[in-house]
Image 1 (cartoon, rainbow, N blue to C red):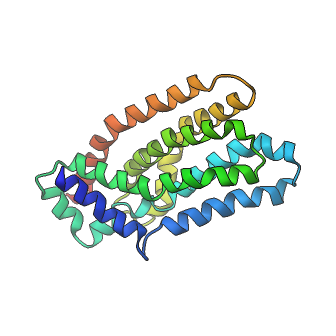
Image 2: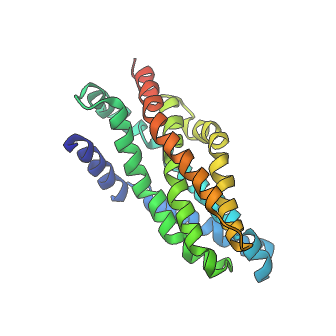
Length: 221
């Protein structure tokens, strides 16, 4: 457990440091959402109708920004080779790094999302559903994205390949996340969508560490 927490703490320091991608990710998220009112017009009805989709798509794209460097930097300086030989299983190493990625990207995006939702004229009654959906959905984005990052280790155009591999796999998260908010907006229960997000997260949490570890081992051979 100490080794697991040490890896999480190290990646958090890197993520929140001057060279981290947290600020870039948040800035992209804010700018991407802010551009939509300029493009579609300021009508509250239109903005409220597309708010959930806009926020989820922007969050998905923002989460992709830093994924290509999730393991690449450690591979370049030799840290990944040392981690692969450590007593801690490589799957837990991958899980620790993915947790740190979510804490520096997914969690900040979730925290700032309600402010952008207000700007997009989203109804206040749907805010708790939006927050809960993002809390369930963004960890899945990091877990699935980490698989793509591990598969592209050593590739010349890893930053381009990661979204191409990851985006088709996370479409269910996007659909269920938007569906939960829209169901709440129409007075329906969002429970089915939230349960599906939770199931997707549970499956990702169970399977992703093994897939990431296998991809890392192939890259290091």
